[in-house]
Length: 106
Image 1 (cartoon, rainbow, N blue to C red):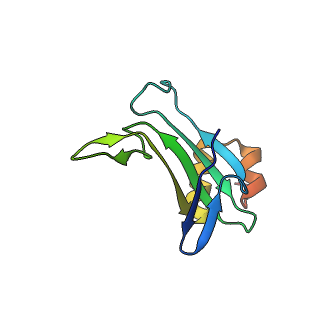
Image 2: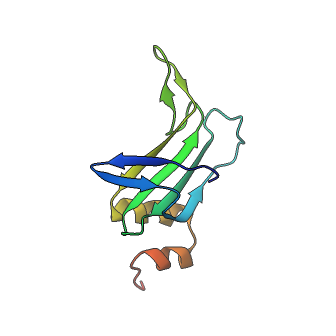
Image 3: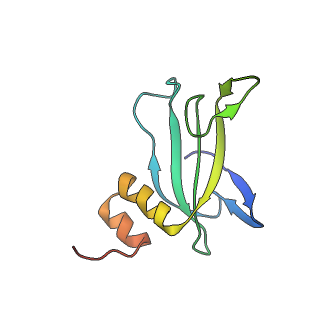
């Protein structure tokens, strides 16, 4: 992800500048696609997880613009360990997942 996003949630400051990026989700289709998004999973220095990203009008990061309209936007969402692991399991390789989460042999 090529931009800085910072947000305060429940008195805690989350910033892509100070956190470690774990993995990034950027589906095909290109930046001109209305569904385009770039979403990354991060871990703060204190061990909290969050998603941050940006995207077009039909992405998870879209913003309201007038009546029933959406436009491109960006955002940041805090998440618990289970949700972070699930995101990582869908978008990161096994070594990366093992580096940030507890993993057991099957």
